[in-house]
Length: 143
Image (cartoon, rainbow, N blue to C red; front, side, top):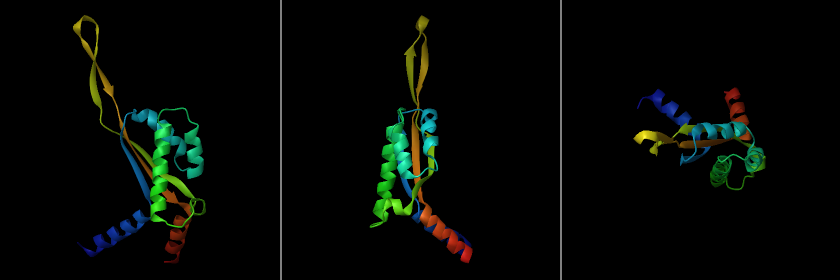
């Protein structure tokens, strides 16, 4: 591997150390409906996002809330002894991608059948820390 490529790989690894990720695969809800809930919490602090999701009536809200709690647990596993409030965790990215589509048939008049598509999605939550990003920005400015 060349020196330039190695340096960029090292920077990429360092950047990933400050990200805390959780994924939910094959969630049996259509991506369009799930994106409506995901848009509510994108860029919001974790405590506020958990409150929003707790009282949202949509079907995807409890699933995204549980996924967000999983991402927080991943953060706690990497940062022993730190408090979540002190690091100012927030939802840096939340992506809802299309998953597997199951194709089913529904009976129709005159011996025909209509196709039903049962969609699913993949949800990825990435948390960031405002304190860590501010410290990284200060070190970048000093260089």
